[in-house]
Picture 1 (spheres, rainbow, N blue to C red):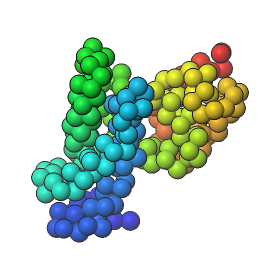
Picture 2: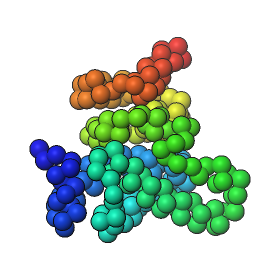
Picture 3: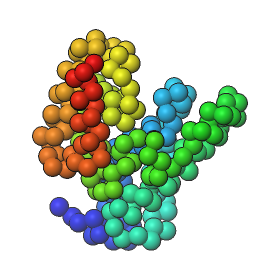
Length: 207
């Protein structure tokens, strides 16, 4: 497996395959964060995947401007680009809908705002990317359950309605998804996210 620094050197030299691999690895993480930035209300009017694609397009064009050398710095650089494009989307819909108070409250950094999603609280950016990739390997309905439960903090009844399942069936999907993630990434499921998942499971058991 090619090391990050080696891929980055190749990408800076114009190797498109190396650049594609660097961007592909971060796409799931950026997609999760774009969804978190736009929020449930905005997602009905704006596709987070479009924001991610614009981010990756700009990163491909401006890779020579990246001055970092670590994977963490690379992720932060991409996050900043993502935030800029997401802010444009928010401004556009803010003007269209004139929802000044709600929009101003919602715009914030995916890295610094701990209220945005638990994923942004994990310091290890490599772990963040690994987790996001693991979530993307789940079946679509399990992805939706995990994202809504962990990152959007939605109650089971609301998640069940969104995925068109009963509350009981949704709980089963949640349990299976968490087990799969732990099987795939093992000890990487730790820190703030592990506490979030554990606390969710404890709350669920009392509901």
